[in-house]
Length: 414
Image 1 (cartoon, rainbow, N blue to C red):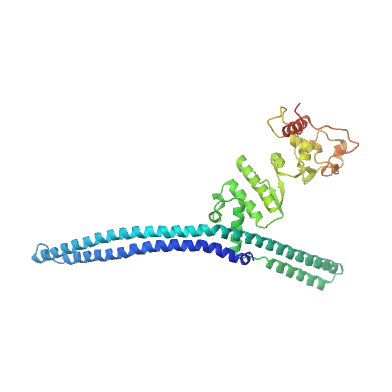
Image 2 (cartoon, one colour):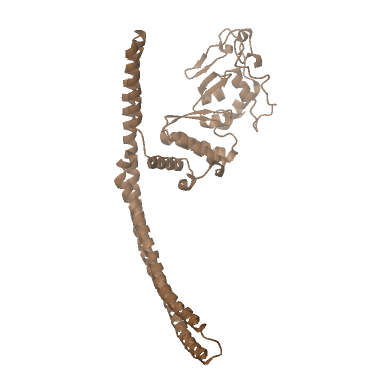
């Protein structure tokens, strides 16, 4: 579909290069043809010498006939050697003339190519944008139609199941299969289109020479390049939401920064949401707009990034922030005591209670609900209940928040 929309501009862009390459090839062929013409003449003369030498060997040496034929042979050889020498000189001169002529033709071809390329590239890029917009609109419209039809059939199927009408159930199930098949058939692409889409997304994630890299194996890529390939694979589906599960694990700091910068770039350019799963709170602070802190498979605190880092309310969030090494804190790092719960047999009440030095008796009996801290900030801890004793944040957390605010210029350094 896309190829049809951009066909004219794509052909013009490719033909510009094809014309230049044709002239390059024509020049090279002319040089080769000139050299071959001289080589053919030289070969014919060398063949005459070989034949004369062969005929001389037929005569018995040290006989009058041999000496007579030898004289003829040497005379012929001297004559032919002179001719060959002349041809070699002519070939050299002709080659030089053809090369100089070819250089001028190639220069003119390059000039035309470079002159036309920017306008043709601009026209192609603009048409690609138009094509992408049209395809996106088409897909959205077709998806809306598909979902509406599917919803209607699902409702009919539910009614048929309630009525236990087996014939109607079978009929509707066939309709659903046909609807799905028809929907998928509208988005099939050719092998060439798939390859071009892959190359485009490889360029988008910053992989150099995608045409070469496309044919390589994973072991030929660095860790950072492999991570870019994984991101590229995800992007081929044109997702509205990209889920990144520990995307910087096992990468050095420099490569981590490059991958994070790439993800931020893709988020802006594609207007895409990112769900970032990580244990690295430094990454969270730099990447996230909203943060959900999870423990034992459940969200225990959620808020925007400033609320989580500057006003944390859950004891587990306090423990996480306390256990991160930094260059400003003088206090000893506080490791979280105990081990995570066994989720096949979860504990009663708050899963974090056994590791929480602020736990109350209710934490061991009842799982806490979410308490509202602000319109955007919630935490699941009984410490936020009105009846709970007032507990201050750990000193190390308060000190770190204070230092961070001072560095940001939010509060004055005392």
